[in-house]
Image (cartoon, rainbow, N blue to C red; front, side, top):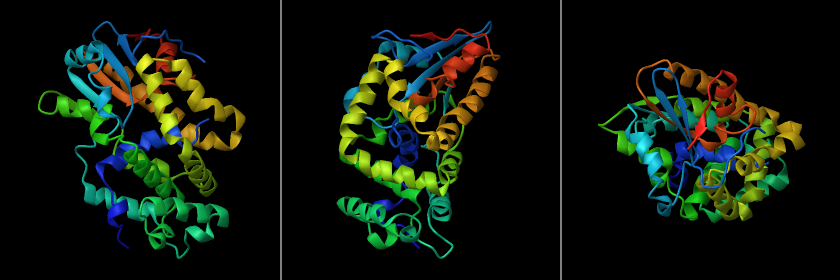
Length: 303
């Protein structure tokens, strides 16, 4: 089965993964003053590591960035990102999506979710020209990500203006680029969610659609002001109120935060400086990277 033009894998698809994690299931430990950036400096005896919380899709008017962000990047020797979306074999990624994102066992979407939700999916898909026949063979996680991608593109948020893409372009031919994870890892994570959680996420994706523009504007406002408390409240309130979402929060945030922190700790043993970019949601909360670094004895400074 081929994916139609409207759902064909693009580089924007990879960038939407973390935005999907931040916005689909919206639901205390770091404080910030207005005027700060979502940028931290961590110093060791040998070097400095800068950690920037990223928004993966943006509008052109987010630039120019605060000079301190540009200066921190310029004085670093390495750029570290979650996944290098400019170095992706799209044919292999599309094959992965076909294998993990479609029903290959003879079943289909209609037989795996409620009729009401199924009807809502077809109605929402129609707005973006998605083929109902193809939608019926897509697993809920893939439909959620596809709808989010198309929705935010329609609002003017582009991958080309995303923070990650901006610095990857600047680093090309100038700095070595290191991946913390990979696009394959992120797709594996999303496709590993339980069927129940995938259905919940799909339902939330559709229900939150009418608030999409408002939610993203709030998200950008928190990011621009370095407001970690506001972002934490936005993203994690549902974790306490709805225990059924624990699998989502653990896989998308906690598990990855610990792995990323371990790698950052190794960078701090080096003699070179590093500029690390991760989704902003990974830096906040009790199990956020900034708090985990504090627990190891470091003193991250918000710039």
